[in-house]
Length: 441
Image 1 (cartoon, rainbow, N blue to C red):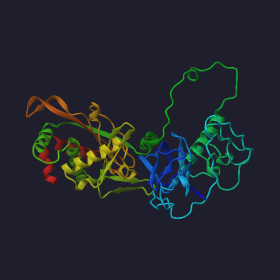
Image 2: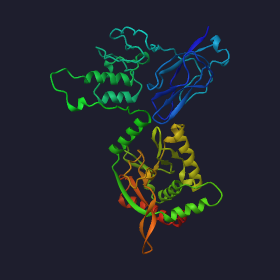
Image 3: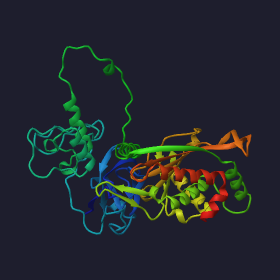
């Protein structure tokens, strides 16, 4: 007799508690091999292909493409030892797992909610207090508030779900979850909030706002993570911005000379990054973070340099580790590697976390200046505009020079304007006269 094993969404690391199903890679009835990728999910950090540790026949999938699942919720079930899977693998599981997810022992069986195929008759609603929400055709879950608050622990594992309920004054004990074993999901809270928000019918003319229909785009995945981080930065960090125009003609000439010889090509971003690491060595206050609870500024020993990269899936900030120990050629190679991975959607959560300072080259969008938002919990960000020919007074005469605007947004808690201005002036001096950088090499 085949044994049916349940594979749950594993812990994807970096404190992530949920993921969105982007694309199923297998269907019910498919034979899967041990460690074969079965689903592609998007977290707040990156896209991840999730491998199944079991070999056998897929008997059920849980969750539609576009839906979100919490860590620990069932992904699919696999019949191990089924005749049609005789060629899959001889063992039941591999033991090769993602962060925090063990397969070395039998998985505890849980009551599962199977999706109802489209067109099938809807099951009758569960009686009040039964603990399971009714599921209409298509497998979509509908949560209804229970008439009496339940005793005992609230079945919620996602802190985002708790936060959503808390901010809207919703009692989670009054909900019947639609997840496994009555687990309360985000869709359950949102459904309950919609029910509470329904107005009592009155005789009144519709407002202009109600009459206008718009397209709603969910803030989830990478876009949602970016929104949360930027909002947190604005609410927690008292930031200030200073800027300066610099003549980058000599920097561009130095780059051309570097790339005229054999060897790896050096990018403008890499030269700016090397200047940043030298400036941070002089002004370490800007390579720090603030521990608000302890009321302490933590100056960090290494420069993990983030850089903004625009992709089809939105803005991401890959991190170059230990940038202070790299030369321009090494920085160029690492920028190229991480940029390619960002565009391919293969960055790992580790590639996107742990930054201590961010370099933002918004000049690639054809703009001169900006006041960037600090990448929380960092203390500063250097913005670089486009480098373009402009009239400039050079050696007492008017000339056409390659000019760039540099802006520094900094956390005013970690330093005053004198430090920020000194940092920015040193960066500008190195841009205008790259030989200045030789003093710090």
